[in-house]
Length: 529
Image (cartoon, rainbow, N blue to C red; front, side, top):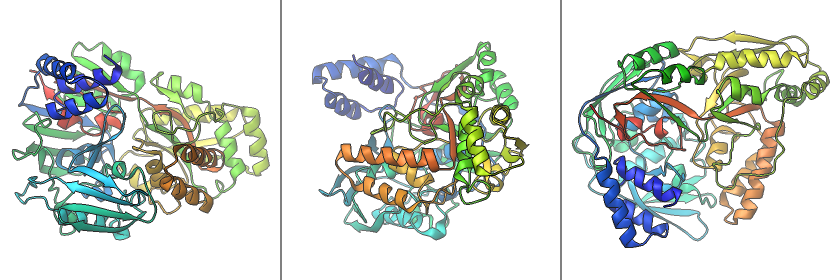
């Protein structure tokens, strides 16, 4: 049994794959019908998911400014909340990252990948009893492509020229070919809502496995089971409570005492302590997430590339991975792509800590005086410690960093994407194109380094429509070099997603797509009393 087959079997055991889905994927992987059938039966009998119970999650990331409009989902808290009540057209496979059907049950591109036709699933009901229609799908995508919506997916959908219905199908016409189009529709902002959410984007009415029963921004969200859910392989608990817990110590105490079943953002420094608790299990998943120090390329003094290079060479990446991540991660190279992505640009020289080079570029920049770095524990686990560690490594290059600790509440509205130098994190995206389109395209709302280069934008669009993978890989390499050598991101480390649960929680799916089982944790697990 190869790794992929083992993974499929584990998904069946966890209740995450129907027989039909399992057989289709297993046979596509070269497994005979008889072997696939035997493997499914054994896996299904291994652990039948239990239904019922009240699941409580204590999550970092909530803020009083959180919005229940999917277009404006920003934090880890809302990422999980949205996954509970909403569905996208497409999801991604937890192991491979490949596009898999959701509300769109199939799709077909034109030969140049510039026109995509998606067959929309029938018989699906919204929480208010209304049946999902193609018009709801069209309205949703049109709202997210409207600049007035301020959607976090706006940059992802920027190449769509026309959105229309053709019978029961969705037809997207693009300004150029895009081989990744299905995966782009898995973006967590693109929750399908009645009439696209135009009438009331905050209504939280979707087609997901749970119905929202109460919501207090940054504090708490509660859910009840959607009895009309169109899927049987999710939503095992009767009710869910998502509690905002921005204090790491409070989260650990709540889990250890059994007040909650699951917490996110476990600081690697506390892993050994948590392991001592008899009822706690550490859930660590490698993926595309990364911790960053972001400089605004359009604001002084960071509009000087020599200063940006100085600050990059002053970063001790290896020490960061060991001391901040506790080894739960890998060093980064100042561009947001790692080897989990298709067409990863290999052979780019790893940037290492070099105080002499940092001092050279710092002197060349002409800057004098301290550099203000804003940080917070909500930026990423150990964010404040990472800033202080960086402050020390900069001293050896003669660079003075002033660290300012900001309050967690309001960090994502008052500091991130606003202040010129701060710490932050990214959960990664399904494709290189989506990662770059979301955070590095000149016109992207979430271009948090204010990196604006017409030649980069042009190359991004060319790569998007290039069907020759070798040529496309070369383009991605050129883009990575631009970001690495001239961009405003200092990317010292790709983090493993380190979370924890009580041993009552079963069926957890490790998903490379993003943290917290790609946000689906509450909908995928069950409770074993």
